[in-house]
Length: 314
Image (cartoon, rainbow, N blue to C red; front, side, top):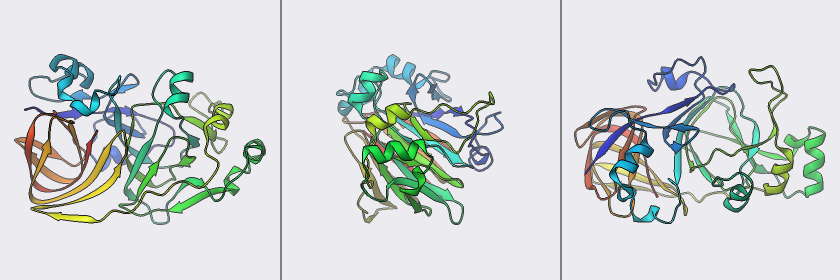
């Protein structure tokens, strides 16, 4: 049995804010902390074991040292570590973008595609995000609207509130709006095709790169598929709500009031991301913003305290 606390990798994209530092206690010197990669074996930003016998190892190094059995049998079908989990603080609008599916991404980019899920951790009043199109449009109209900067006239803006869930299949046009803080569970990929970026410039003073031709190849030109609402289950000492389930990940929102007995069996590791409160996880102390990795084959483990967390398995 092994339970490890992780330290994240950080990203300082131009649209980021400061809440990951001020509200979630992240230790980062960036002026803007746009993203913290809480569970990551990606080459662009790895999470690191914090404390204990394996302190300082990246998560990938930890897995290599202990063997792939710590991932569980459901991970055997994946060539690489399958998922990436982030906290995202959007002080400003993100670009309008799309991610490719596995076939296209592996052929063109040499990595997985990207299906993802967003959980709205918090948001400003009146905040909105972009999620697919209002209606079906043609490839010709898509190309024309990109060229003449009228794309936002046909995209679907959705008001959001804390606790909302959005499942974003590869190919779905999307953009996080300003004033939204999100927990994102996604395939282990960093491939993003920007289509529209509000005319912004990067740190070098030049317009940020767009990927229009690739976006035309992969974008689904219609409304996004809404993920069905699921009920809250009242269990002994905690509540559980299924947020999403797909071939890459299964994710729950869990609220503990006292004690919750969870499980990491032989099929999958468990990732815990604390969104609020404090907890003791089999002796490992965790507070708001902490990310915990529980080896597969650990079996039952106990979360004691009052907290809200995201539980993810493969």
